[in-house]
Length: 309
Image (cartoon, rainbow, N blue to C red; front, side):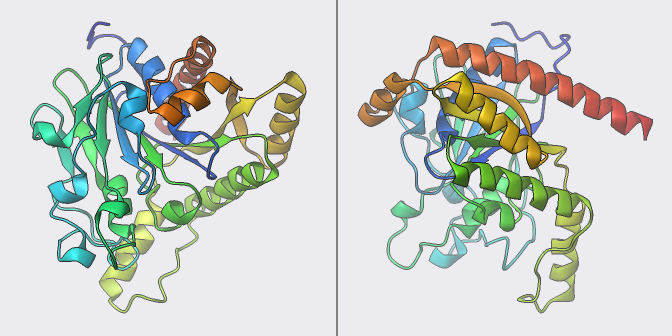
């Protein structure tokens, strides 16, 4: 691995969100994409924005989990802190830019491959009455990272379902990758995510009937209207055979969702997640490299389109 700042790295500084239904394998995909990007000379930072899932640091090969960014930014408003829910208060976090070389060591982990890990927060640590993870969504929406050698690619691993997206946590992403396992529910979620982002990009305003301050309404609408998301893309996961892959690709195509990669079923990974061990797979490494190549191509095309416009 070298930190060649002259190499053309089209994904440098991009924010990529990993979404999907529960159990689809978002964290697995996130880790293997991080490895593939790191092997391609990118600086990488994973933001664990799943408010309930634990064990990301163990699967990456680090001994300790970093302290939460909720604490770094002053705690949840529900517990007397300063970080508010983006639905109630869309106001951006103050000073959300974090330099990985300067933030205190307890707020990040780095695995032997040089992949940085940040944790937005876990609601299980906060006690009774503090179960809303809206402030964690604001962390995921607003935080940006820099590093010594180059702007890192930031992979944001969201919790299962649509809630984070509906709150606007994806508005600041460049790409949304939805992980699709061989289930009807997973296909539907990917298609619905595509529809929602398409409506955002077309200028459909978010729900703001609960807000009374006109300035907050304007801010919420501008955040959704000015979203930076290029597109919603699918990564197939836990695919047992060619026939299943073909079915998933065809079903997603009907929903106008482009598939950019396929992760085969790997039962060994299940045991690693169960035991809290480093996850490894040669096949998934190869699949991840193919996804990175396709993302680089799509990002380069998006930049050319923007320049022409």
